[in-house]
Image 1 (spheres, helix red, strand yellow):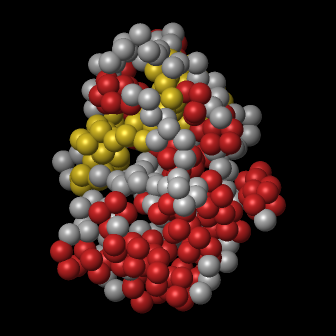
Image 2 (tube, rainbow, N blue to C red):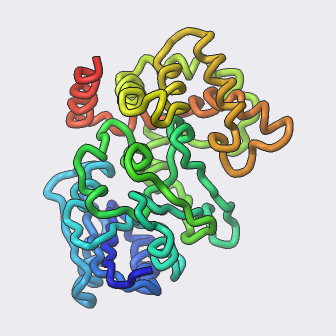
Length: 335
């Protein structure tokens, strides 16, 4: 690992007064030197700006910015990342805790990849959390991504505007674009704690769309998944995303993702069955957290398109005016 390489850390905040101090403190305790910490607030009405200004006064490498108007989390992260000047960029939520060696271990692992991400612990408390090991193959990223707060990115990649597909969440976009370019590597140990609570960005978005996550779900995704899958297929964002992936791959480059994105654009039942079969066949690189094992894992992986579709809000939460315009441009280019 070359410690001459510099790392910029980005925190985007919005009404995060309850947890922001703990997160900043955990970043200050990193064993790898932090070149700059950029904090950009998106119109908080609590004491978050005052807390961040206090830290900025005490630490010259902390730079605090306030948006003149609300941008939303996607655009907030994009514009904050554009301000970074380090060799690498690490993205951070406002309410997590980083373990001391997070950046050091990611810097040791990233090599020539566009992104290095890490596994993480997720839960209400650190003592009551689950170990999350997201999939990251190109075919897995057709359905979901790993969290932005686990990412370390090469700065030039992170600052390319075309890598921020404004019509899906920024972390999903960056992961897809990385696999279409120089790839991704994962550190196979938890390097941060993702705090789950009712005031988090994800929880608030789920509440807004009346789709709060329920850990006790059993049969619902299987019964309602087919209807939800076809419902998602009607969305312009769905069409924009999979046309982009299909056009960016081929039978020679990422052929599985190419074939699966083609199937996801087709609205026939045979195409869906073929997609389900491919999810089952390649379940060890598509399904997550080791749940692809055994008979139950085989069944779940076959129905993964249904499970993925149930309560999915990823195609809705970025429906801003600029995002709609971007998806229109992509649809036009790929038509």
